[in-house]
Amino acid sequence: MEFVREVDTFTARHFDDLDAGRVRALRISEFVAPDVAGYLADRLTQHPSLSVYRNTSELMRVGESHYETHDEDSHTNTQALEEYLSRAETLVTEIRAACQPHPSPMDLLWRLLDESMGLRRAEIAGRPMFAGVVRVFPEGSELLPHNDVFARDAPGVAAASGITAQFAANIYLQVPDDGGTLQLWGLRPSEQELVALQAPGSVYGADRALLPAPDVEVAIRPGDLVVIDATRLHAVTPQRHGRRVGMSCFLGRRAGHPLICWS
Ligand SMILES: O=C(O)CCC(=O)C(=O)O
Image (cartoon, rainbow, N blue to C red; front, side, top):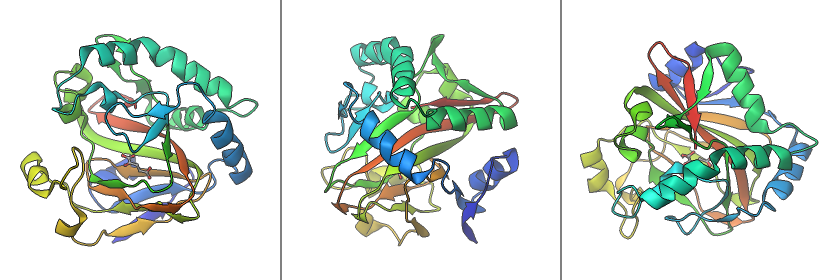
């Protein structure tokens, strides 16, 4: 099986292959020139919205993630959701401005996808969601194996129920000297299986000891863009030295409609 496919653009066929499990990741190497990626990591992490995730204290971000609008019991926190939606446009604009004089890498990705498959911003009750979160993994942090499923994470949201496939796009800007690789499995556990796999003390992650070895570990490099199937298990290994900064969004496929993006 093919694990990481090097591409120079994205087509519907590439996304079919990810969804069908014929490939684990699509990569555009040096999507952003590595020196520009370093500059963007420094600029973006100075944005005033840099703070820990509301519900995942080991991670930091600039911008916001819809995942933060849940409480630990997985119910929507209506105040957090209102704040997320009311700040969405301002944050997209400010992140774009912080990248100057360079274009925002997310804008470059969205233009590419719009040209090939059509792309819109996901909406909740007619209001655009934020997209393009800048994630900062401090030294010592990791992401346990998990998957991302919008309909599970945003119950009752109309945009989520029409999604037939969900992908995660990550553009790496700064990478740790040691650790922080992206692990990918072919597994797509059911919600029941996820409960059985849950790591002690974690609200979102699976216990690595209960899983087989990942199919592939993708060494990440500054400037690379990697797209994976978000509904299959994936993880980030512990970062032993240095921080890891990337820009990220989800992409959802809907039958007969353009892709949608959000964070
Ligand atoms: O940062 C990465 O390499 C992957 C992060 C992740 O878990 C995701 O995009 O859902």
